[in-house]
Image 1 (tube, rainbow, N blue to C red):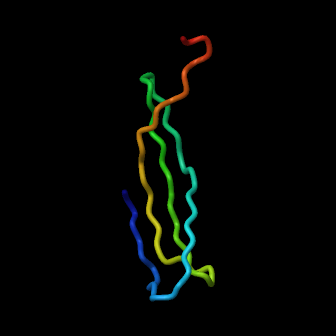
Image 2: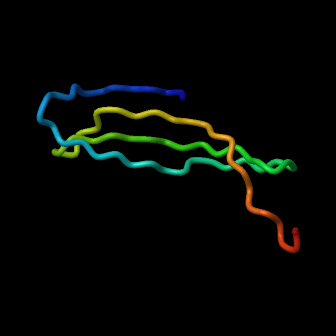
Amino acid sequence: MSEVKFPDPVFHGDTLRAETSLVAVRESRSRAGLVEFEHQCFKQDGLLVASCKRMALMRKRPSEGAC
């Protein structure tokens, strides 16, 4: 995880919702590729309370005609 931020406090009783966005995809010749996600967490009033970026190694779909 990178660029982790907590710009506003969260208190007992707050309602939170999270959103995840796909930021970038990096192909490779292997069976996996790198995917970068951005996660954001908002309070009930829409105020951003947490965010971060995350890289993940994801398996690729089998190519056409592969058994």
